[in-house]
Structure formats: structure tokens, C-alpha cells
Image (cartoon, rainbow, N blue to C red):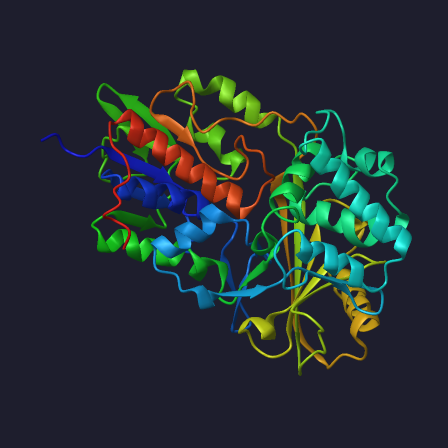
Length: 441
């Protein structure tokens, strides 16, 4: 019997662990390398003032089938996620909540009952969803979301409170630049799919504990290696396999999955000439930031929902972390994509966000501490016609995984997980292996 293929995974985020678990289930021997001591990549926990907070606030949707499947595989309990029906709530302005009915009645009745939207707004929203369905959610490839909204005569209120916030949250790209086709894909598989697809799944645990840490334990229990604080500097080819600069054992690997942020790929593959087209493709991607401000108050805040929308200022979404199992008074405020907030000093931005929270919720308890985390290159800019690399590459044993690889969807946790699964399954197929249904534990 031939020995199982040795596969290296570089990167301990969601894409890397999705690839590693899938490879392990197919019979490969996996070694995962993470440069940090903390697992999770850009979706990881951060320690501050005695608190464990996320590097950035993330939510999942019920439509995230691959992510939810992967969580089940590594033993994550359903209670780790708070499941809520879709609720877009701007206190004092607008409230649209999906009804507890099968699709499409859940959204139709929710829209009918929505507060803060006029009948003109409601008809415009129904018209756009009907138009998209009628054209099978296919959009001209050069269309932006702003053009789509203008051509379908969406109202200013809908654009401000529904479409623009949803677009920026999903695509992390301003509506004037965002791909209408990708936005249509998101709407098709969330709002227009089964009622559960639009459910909001908000993690009750930090992002490292949600998947990377359980996946690491799952791999270790099966004899695979997860090596933290071991940065890989480059990949080289010898006559019989790939070696990693930074691997003290100089293992020979048949395949390597690069599951890092896209801007780390070029240094890793500099010694592999066949990878030059991939490096050029990645260099053509633009990036968008995400800012997450954490505010710890000395007492609870009257959130009507665990997640509320903010409008008229810098903040876009605010989350009551105490409703998610966190400490009382802890709030995260998210600002996606580039904007005017980038010209504001951190202290001034935090004061402005507290004022926006007060305008939405009323008087606030005293502030104990604050921290603002900025990911300057959080995601690629999801623009019309953007060219994204595939998981497979011209170098036969080198594979890519991450939220930036080719996909119908924007840069989300689901895109990251799906890319890792796809890369791993292609490796298994190349090696004549496949996932075993006997390894579902």
C-alpha cells in the first residue's frame, strides 16, 4: 500500500483549516503552519484590557452551508451561534423583520409589516427582487450596484437604509464601485432562498474558538500537525517534492495549499517561475478596509436587537455583545469599506461613534475603555469584472485558498471555507483519494 500524500497548508485561518480538515478526511497527512501564536488569520481573537475580542465583528448567514457543515464536522455545538431571523433595525427609523413563515412569505410578510418604509418604498423593494428573479439573477458584467439601484428606481430611503448597508456589509465595497452581479448572487442565495438562508448567525464565542481552535484539536487527535509561531518564508521545489523555508524538519510535501492573505503569496512563490501569472493576477486586486471599534460601557445598553443599523454618521452596524454571551456593556461598531472615517483621528472617531449610539439608543452608561482595530486590507474590492485567481495554479502542486479566490461570492467566511474545501478536494482527486464518509466524527 502506498503511503498517504504529505500536504502542507500555510495559514491557520478559516480557509486553511477547511482545507486541512478536508484533506485529513480524505486520507492525506497534513501539516498546517501558522506564523502567529493565535489561530484564525484575519478572523481571530485579540486580548485587550482583560477582554477577548474579535479582530473584526463577523456574522454568518443561514446560507453559509459549507461553513456550517465544517463546524459540525469538527464538533462545534449549535449553541455557539445565536440564530435570529433577519432583522434590519434602525432604532426610531426603520424595522424590517422576516416573518416566521416559509419562503417567500417570510420576506413578503416582513416587508408588508415593515415600519419606517412607505408603500412606495415597499413596492420598489418588491419590484427589484421580482426583476432580479425574472432575469435569473444575471446582470450585465459591467454594472455597479449604484447603477442597478438607479435603473430599478429604488427610493432614497431604501438605498440609505436597506440596499447600500447590505451591499457594503456583504461586498465591503462602496455601491458606486461594487459589482451588481455579485450583489445579485448574495440576494439570490439569502433573501430569495429558503427562509433559513436569511437567518443571522452571530457567534457567541470569539472567532478563533468558533472554528480554528476546534479544527486544530480535531486534526491533532487524528495525528496531523498544527504548528503555530512557525512562519513560512518561501516554497522551493526539489526533485521529489516541495520544501518550506521555515520548516525545521525540511519535510518533502507533494502539495502545498497557500491559505494566507493574498498579499503574502508573492514572497512565498518567488522561487517558482510558473507562479508568475498568478502573482500578477493577485497584484491587480485592490483592497478595502474594515474598522471595528470596541466600546466597553459600565452598564447595559437598551439594544432592541443584538445587531442594529446606524445611519447619518460614520458607524454602519452596532452589536450588543452581552446578548451574545459577552460581558455586559460591551459593544462593537463596524465601518466597512473606505470612506470619510479614514480622515478622522482614532479618539475623535470613537467619540463620534458614541454620539451615534446615543442618538440611536438614548443616554449611555459611562465608558470604561475603547479600542479601534483597523484592517487596512481586509478584503479585495469586489468591483465589476474583477479577475480573481483560481484555487489551482500553473504549478501542479501549489494551490490557493482564501476569500479572494474565484467565486460567485464576495470575500466572506463562507467564501474562505469553500475555497479551502475546493482546493483540498482537487488535491485528493489528483492523488486518487476522496473524503471518507466514515470520518464524520
